[in-house]
Image (cartoon, rainbow, N blue to C red; front, top):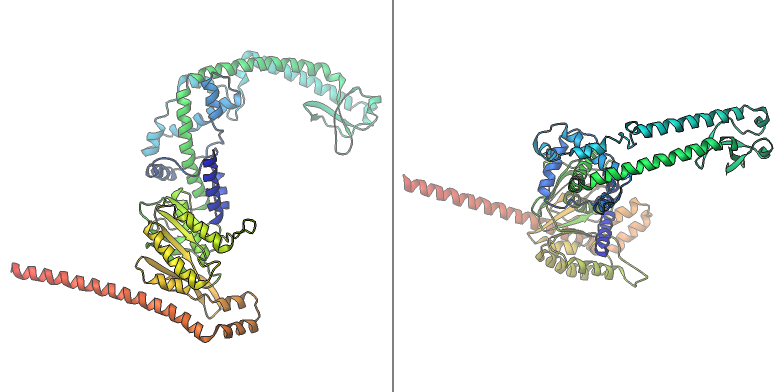
Length: 542
């Protein structure tokens, strides 16, 4: 139990870190019964069923309770109540609804496996569509119901006569029959006892009295007696139903398990249709290509397009330019693909790999109570990442909490080691030194958040292959810092530092461009070599 709770808490924490709470909460409302987000078993097969169901128009299943208690009672030859029996009836009726459509393909084959026994039909016929017992099918119950109806009419007539009485009219608050604490009552003012004999069963918010008159006591007693007779008959039916269902335990276990699967499928399909989202599952590699992805927490957002085919993606660039949301989007899309949760993207041109774990280091881990600094907390989080294999790791502002030059060296080695362990890492950073140290690797992809120099604001767009400026001074001015303070800060920062920053960015860009050119030249040389070989072979053949 502790292990399950631990897994759940880690999952919920990740959902919170990736800003997916509202999306997941809304998704869960589409389930007919409470269920885990992950579908156990063959994911390829599950996805085939989901795709087949996605092509159909169908009504959502009713809300269904868990069968654990029901199956436990039947196993011990216990007696189910009508509500529990109707839970089974609801599942059977829903599968029959699909079975009667005579569908083709994988869904039709699945529904053909549901063979509903005649013994179950004998139970099912006693329940209406909303779960009420069909008393008309039993002559005794029908007769008792009619007798109750007669007594209620007698009570109603008696109460109406009282309300029309001149003696009582001065004490009546209104001319309605109220039903309070399972009693038919009149609402009267204080002093009513001079003209009305009865029992007070409640008080109104205005201080008036709900009184059940003694004149209807006889009819109420008769109704109670008849109700006891009805309950005796109902209990006999409950025993009979439970006995028949006891013999159908294998069938009930089968439909319970199959409904769990179907519920997981239909919830995804109907949620996707409700928001015009797409269904996509993880592929058997580590490549991530997102086309027109929109994070569910954003509205009117610019679609994200990113090719993260390499081992490390380093995102640099302008402050408040969308770097963190890009990181969250990459992790969120991978998480949703792993659990086959609908999302908005171009599913045809997108490709999301498979990872055993999705890990996020996003929040400031500083904890005063435990004497944990920001940097120490970050080191604790990194130490846990080394325990995982084949994980997708997202680190926001990797340099948080320590000296930038020391951090650049430290995190370069950490990132190198994570890659050796088979991790795939996406990082946001303002460390141009760290980005420059990592940029010479073939398995590192650079990406920069862009800044509109003319309008002095971020564009919330990204360009691959470059290191971007932070535009700290421009961002400070945009968010209200006085221009004189910004100018003085620029002077303190100095032209040399600015030039060094630009040189790092430009140097990294030129280095990558040179590598690309070398690659193209090598490809052309190889192409020429093959052509030369072909010409030589042709010459020899001639």
